[in-house]
Length: 66
Image (cartoon, one colour):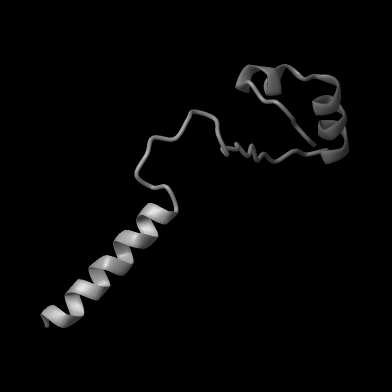
């Protein structure tokens, strides 16, 4: 049993450290937010979102798409 546990523990520890899971992540690095909604008129909603960028500015978005 010990011969099985030691290689397994070593393998798992190596994978955890190789993916840099040990350190703290900086806020906003690699993060994204998805906003989903339902509209009665999707075309009008799309035009509204293109003209009104206050929602993406409120979230602090660097890029946004509709």
